[in-house]
Length: 213
Image (cartoon, rainbow, N blue to C red; front, side, top):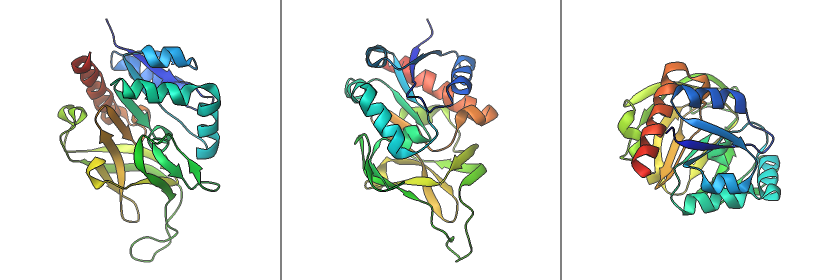
């Protein structure tokens, strides 16, 4: 039986393309705004586009934030995409400081206006970029040492613990493109838009869930 993935719907995610990508990797996406479904699924995937403050408010008001916390506390494999990575942290600075879900220590900050050489940096960061993986998280067993993914974002995470960074990319300087801690794995890029590289990542997610069941 295909693993059942709660694809969290809080009103601001690109759910259709993510669901199709999960199906191609032989996963069973269940698009849901029901906290009970999130708590009971084999895995939880939080995608997202939009503003940090609005996304957190929608998750908290619907009860989905607590459901995600409970699912991760119970060891369910969590995959975050873009905002699904950013919202894990203690706080984000978009439109003022807003508390996140508090699963990972650190904050989410905007890219600087200039790169490391002092040249203007175009924001948002849009397009293909190489990610270099490191560490020993189970997700990495199915991934190459580096791969090229599609990004669309103006903000990036700044973890307090550098050991949770398992993927790095460069845009105006190095930044954390993938983070992991125990049963939480999250990426700043969009695997559903990243063609074969994205499928490799979602295949690795399927394998990780299989090991966790």
